[in-house]
Amino acid sequence: MKLPRDFSGADLAKRLGRLGYAVTRQTGSHLRLSTSERDQHHVTIPNHDPLKVGTLAGILNDVAAHLEISREELVQRLFG
Figure: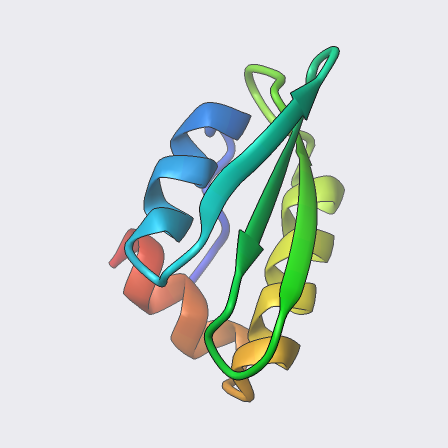
C-alpha cells in the first residue's frame, strides 16, 4: 500500500492514538508522542500540513520497529 500524500502531522498523531500513543508535549510546530506499550517509546512529529513523504516513512518505520511489526502492516492498520 502506498503512503498517503496529503496527510498532516495532526492527522497522524490522531491515528497513532489508536495504537496507544498520546501527545505528551508540543514545542513550536512539533508534537512529541509517547507510549508505554511494549516499554517506553517516544516519537516526534512535525505538525505540518502536509507531511513530506520521507518524513512520514521515517516515523512509520520507527513506530513499526517499536511495535515489532512490518511497516506494511502498520500502514494497513493506520490507513487501511
